[in-house]
Length: 285
Image (cartoon, rainbow, N blue to C red):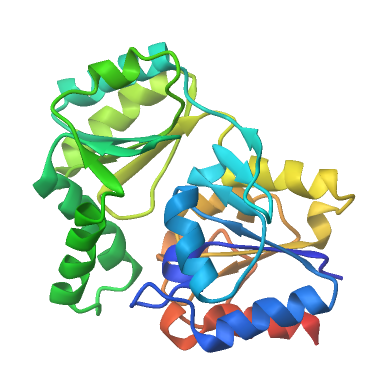
């Protein structure tokens, strides 16, 4: 019997317009009314996640930035697994050496040093969700994210990293040069202190080794006396695999890459056809 459902956002709960369909929102609420604990598990920061969920009238705890931060239903920080600032300086050196663009996800927002590459990074994530997305619409959404101040442009990351008050949750790296990206990934892993996943075909999501969706979900369920065997996870990309490997019911979206589908127990419909609602309602009977 499923007692907890963890749901990814981009490419999963959200459609190609980056909103929650009416069907998905209803299914989440039906699950909650039936006593099932629902938690959102996303690579997004809390600020980026909460507005979309509030618009759909969805109120759940949120595992943010791939498990680097966990928030209660009321928005209180209940756990963090950040990268250490000195460690980030080492990681930044590696990414710079390989000429790989990256952003800093901190408690004060997301920081970038390059507007064009920040937009390109978002395009990669959004288009990876579904290649049939309207490119111009996706480009507009990416630019809006920059213009609304969610991503802050700075000349240098050094003042941020040298500030002891800075909490760094994630580095989001991007390159269209796959050899460069893979070389950076290999060297980053050699440090032995990071987890690396991806939410798009040309990016890397770099977090603390403890900041993974699956680890955060295991802690979340344990605190509620729920077995991972009685937990379902729904996702579409490689940053969801750590959940798939731990839960009793792993559901890949129809729009997920084949490598992600191979890690799941079953497949549901696509994000544009409210696949989340179908997966949730199926287990509710």
